[in-house]
Image 1 (cartoon, rainbow, N blue to C red):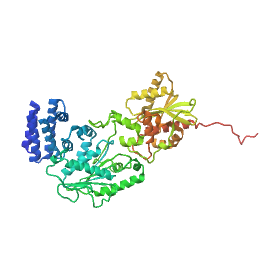
Image 2 (cartoon, rainbow, N blue to C red):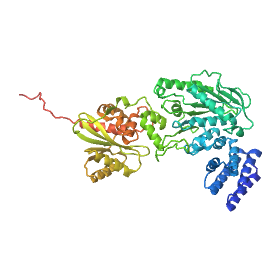
Image 3 (cartoon, rainbow, N blue to C red):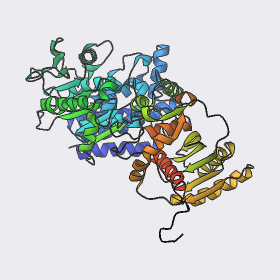
Length: 577
């Protein structure tokens, strides 16, 4: 525990700052206090609090002096080949924290020899902190979590950050060993080479500065294993793949790192393969776990593209639902609120325009798995692509009626959905729609009024639930202002959505015809509507059901209209002729 004199001294530094502000003298003193607390008095917890404060003071001093961050100053330093003593002091604090298992500082220090544009972590750091990835890895080190599941867009760097983390774990816990497990031997080989390079390449990485008393003591490239420090029953870093004979060959005491057990969409669509992969994880990979040298259970980190709700991460989430020691990070391509990219790194990042272009070239299901972190429930799909009717051109002549159906937006992520349909014979062609989840009610009213007036819709029914009667009234006002008259009505709907959607699904598939995919873009309202329709499953959880619900209400409305009783003349058997 830190001595009272040291604590009093640190408090005195804070009093000095209150009076005189931040100067190099007090920064140096605070950094030295952190070293004394950790190295001399062996109070790591208090020492890290002081080091965090020391780091904060240095950052503030650099900003006051240059108007930028330490990272800005470092980039300028490399570009102009100028060294700054303040940066050396800053990295001295990072080194102290890195040696005491602070993940963020260790990631920063590990690459400080590299040219800024060649670094992995710093250009991505702000985004990794924003999405909570760095904090989650810290939580694994601090024993806050037992399992961490991560799914990010392709190319986000999730496997590379795992390599850096694994290299640090080998140094932080030299008496323990960790295992990397993936679907392919090619992947495990690349991973092995990457971790080994971080640990041994002193020209690029500073691993040997963080761990000056450790080195690689044995390697087996064929088995994709190497050991750090003293001999132990299993090497520090081990790699193996699905299908390898792992009994007695590999073990994990600190971390089991499972990376993309599913090789692609073909495997994800096959429930038999998914069951086999789960067995490989549960019966093979997980059985490699033993307790660490401190008697604590081995932890797990899962990194994967979420192809299916029945993949390993999906099943783990179901099994441990509500467990605070299981952390899940799933980040889509763009922020759903701002529309901005979640992965616009300083170098080699992804813009929202990049994602829009990718979406145009991919089928909707694959895009949502890869870029939205929305695994698809392929079992129980009510509206699969191969059963949906499509049109390239409308039939000749005028439609019998142009009608609409509206499902108003409730709270949260609900969608405001209003499809416009033209009737030809027994079929209804869906020609336009509103489909968005904006919370701007005025925009909802305007969008709905525009789609009704522009398509000359003759009648439209609004769902009365969740204030739909008020929405209907507001939309009607705006339609009339646009010079069109539409018979707008509102009606209450039954509460059992699932049963209603299932009941009407066959009629929708038989009688509603949608645009060919070539006639709309995935990110347009029509494309969003079709995506939500195709993804609805009878066996899925927490689904967005607004689109199938609005079409089920439409189906009930038009079929009930056809069920009016007819009066016909009949022979009265009791009447005499």
